[in-house]
Amino acid sequence: MADYYPRLSSVATGLRCACPRCGKGRLYQGLLTIRDICDECGLDLSRLNAEDGAAFFIIVLYSAIIIPVALWVEFTFEPPIWVHLLIWIPVILGGAIALMRPVKAWLVAQHYKHNVDDYNQ
Ligand SMILES: [Zn+2]
Image (cartoon, rainbow, N blue to C red; front, side, top):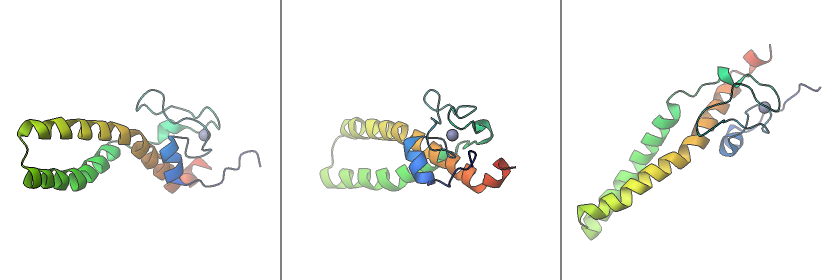
């Protein structure tokens, strides 16, 4: 029973940037580099890879939210272009950086969840 790990929510482990198997070990070393092995349960994390999926989801999310809001600001207040630059550059960059770690961790947890039988062999 020492090797039994209950299935964890991919959202919960993703938000905590934790190992998808044990939920205790840290997923990242550095900003976005995934560890080779979980320091808590020993899961081989190098086999889990989110590739560019996190960037894709963030681009789609931002396109759906930021563009309509920016258009609303433009047509409602008609600010000069420097106001748009002052508002949207920090919002886009800061939000993308803040979302990248949990979204990538969620995708890694989804990868683990849907290939979990491969890890139990
Ligand atoms: Zn672990």
